[in-house]
Structures are given as C-alpha cells and as structure tokens.
Length: 201
Image 1 (cartoon, one colour):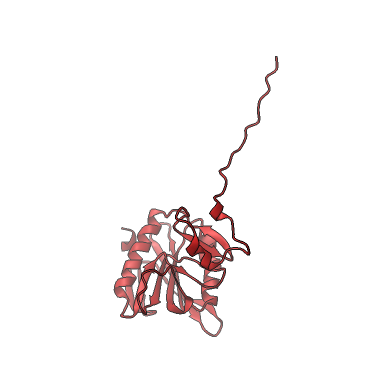
Image 2: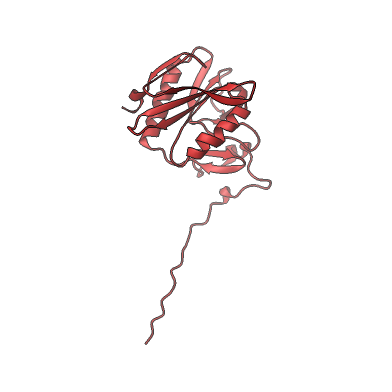
C-alpha cells in the first residue's frame, strides 16, 4: 500500500484593498485618504508606500528625548514635532523622526509640512531603514532645499552619535559639519546643547 503525501500549501493573506495603488499610482495627497485600518505611519518614497516598522527602544527614547530637547531650545517662531511628514513633491512624502519648522498660524489638523517651512529634519537610523536614512532621504531633503539634516546612529556601546549636515547653497548638497559623540553643541538652526548619553539612560 502506498501513501501519497500532499505537498504543503502556502497560504498568504491577501493584501487589503486599500493597499492597491490608485490609477496613475500613489501621490502624496493619497496618504490623507487612507482608511482607519491602514498603519499609522506610512511614507511615500518615489511613489512607493513604505510602512514604518515598529521602533526599537533606542529609537523611541532618542526620538522623544532629542525632540523634547529641541522643543525646549527652540526660540519663538520655531516649532518641533516628531513623526510628522514633509511633502517634498507629488510622489515624495517622507516622515522624518523629528523636524523643526517655522511656525505661522497654528493648524492642528495639518498632516504634513512643506519644505519651505522646514529648518531641520532628523532621521534615527534603524536596521531596516539604514539605506533610506543614509542615502535616499538626504538626497531628497537636499533637493528640496531643507537647510539642516541630522542623522542619528547607535554606536557599539548603545549610545547615540549625531552626524550634522548643512546645505551648501552653491552645490545644493549637504556637507558634514559635526560628528557628536558625547555632547551635541550647535548654533544652527538655533542654539542647542544636549548631553547625548542622557538620551538613552
């Protein structure tokens, strides 16, 4: 008597209807029309939806504490938010971890800022976002003429290192100005002095 074994079947859950791109592809404004069941944090990079992965503890602590330090240091007329999108163009809507922006009339319903409003974007690098944070996004932020970009990495001891860049108006590219290991002290886009080790304690 022979026994016939069935090959295992792989069943993948179908993608939700909202995940299918509209005719002509995704645009930055489409993100405001996603249904409530869509993930809370989605970026649009080159017309492709990027679902932001769950944060590690390092990422969350640095984002909240550095964002708070920036907010406390910001002078009148400058605001700070975390995980707020920047609409760079029709098919570009990244969501930096922290941004500083020029305030105008308060609009509590807004879902993004425009590049001309933004002074600083901060990206905290995680394993899955490393290529976007180190290569893709800085190029797009620079092209949009956002004056300041910071990239935060985790060193071998578990502490943050901040790579500070400033836009060179002659070339339209970011140039490195500081690599801060223990303490971040800068005068632009405004004065700030932060003990980086306290961000993860």
